[in-house]
Image 1 (cartoon, helix red, strand yellow):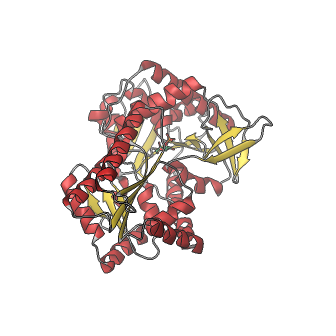
Image 2 (spheres, rainbow, N blue to C red; image 1 turned 90 degrees about the vertical axis):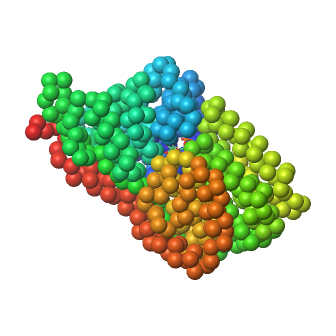
Image 3 (cartoon, protein in one colour; image 1 turned 60 degrees about the horizontal axis):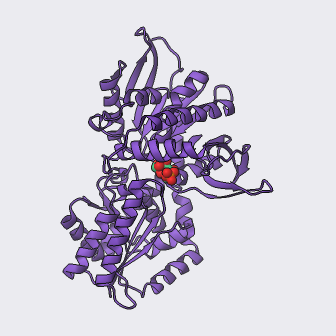
Length: 468
Ligand code: F6P
């Protein structure tokens, strides 16, 4: 496994002892249970600058740290990954920045990851590369180790070529990905966007999901498949967690601490401009203003976990969100009744499960989102078949879970207000009907099935170098 981050962020003290905590984000949530059951290594960055460390075992996984200097973190991670690719791949919600020095760092760091993977992999091994930070690794790794079977999974959306075409290095990225045998995406639409980019930007030919890669002489060298493999969570584990008496007690305690409101709404996101947090809070504030909700009966808990705090767009977002929360609380809050409980923290899975159990309405209002695993966690936690999921149309999860959730377009504030009110007033029978449907899907299509399906297709593909 090769991913930008290891599943843990770690620090080494002066005695050389390693201490770690779980890394943020959906990728780790999804991949950690896959790797625990596998006999393999996870190659990734430790989360700290300049930290050099030998491979080590943590939580039954062999972790192989890749070192990044402070300068590389700035240019490769904060710069090219999170200020160029991230906004470009999320519908340019925030304007992407194109810097040649950032691209140079991205290439250099991708090569380091490819070399680390090449050094770890046994002859003929399967190597699975993940996400937008490492799109050049498949080709670099194939050049180093043609014996390997290489898969790539893109956890975020792949943009239409009309947007992707802005990238000065668009052809290099496409060629980098085509080093893989199998390229997985969250949605069918992402896979077809990629295939269109291949047709528009390279000389290779395509037929349905298959790209035929040719060399400089026009000779066919390989076939690459691009297809959708929607990711999931360890649903059973989350379901079991939420059934624990201590988690259920904690859920009751949370509601009591909030003053036992009739309606508790919940948002859980990394503090990221793609998540539609401002749109959601704006809609909520207007509902209080209009008198369609009131603070004595309803409250919104917004968990916004800190993310990418050195990137300007994230700093601006934090200011906006916190200003908005302050204004709404100042205007509508009463002693003992806050309109919005805003929590700029990350919480462990037990606390998240308790929050999900406590919430009557879960608000997922992303402007664009590869999948959104929070939506699936909420469903997995609700073995009581209660609770309403309000879900943005612009998430991968909406493609999979409809018609169970109430779908919203977060740009349509009035439409979203109506849906939030409908969710708050939904009767228990209708909640049960929808939640059962959602649970059938989420409990059966879990992350183990996702990885087995992807790896099954990858290993069943015909030999890698064939002249046909
Ligand atoms: O898939 C989205 C993603 O960027 C993952 O690659 C990443 O692990 C997660 O979100 C959290 O982001 P970051 O690693 O930048 O904190």
